[in-house]
Image (cartoon, rainbow, N blue to C red; front, side, top):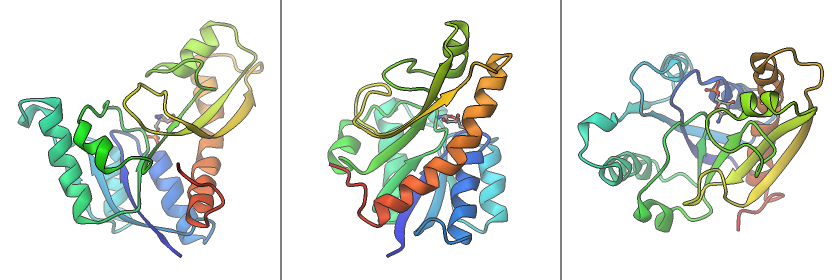
Length: 195
Ligand code: GRF
């Protein structure tokens, strides 16, 4: 069964594009109902247009609190009745308790490190600066903690040959593009259960 998903992205959108391509190539049994962004300049919005996927933008500056912002954005999500919400480079921490109550175990994220190591926005640089020989990627359920929800998939990646933090990012990103659609496919088929 095609798993109905909504994707949230703030920037480049390469993971979003990788998921859309995997769906077209029948490597991922899902359907992207909409792309929602908090950034009107996000390249992800251009990708959505090209892929003919409906998109919406909500800007934090138009709301008086993070909770109000989250509630508005997630009421747009709700219109699509997705079974899974996929964060793909969505750079905003979700603050609304209502959202976590309604979507418990239904929001996932991809993070470019072996969590719990290196949470936050500079995971690849942090791993490189620490002299790590190995880092990786983590796909996890989103809960109220920062990058701390239950882990559903992890992949180790040798970064000892990377000459810079950008090199680490690039190497991990290539693997993200394979791993994220594959994990969504497994969720769709019930092989990975979110609980
Ligand atoms: C990826 O490295 C992802 O792991 C992190 O943010 C980045 C998003 O890249 N959460 P893109 O927007 O999918 O190209």
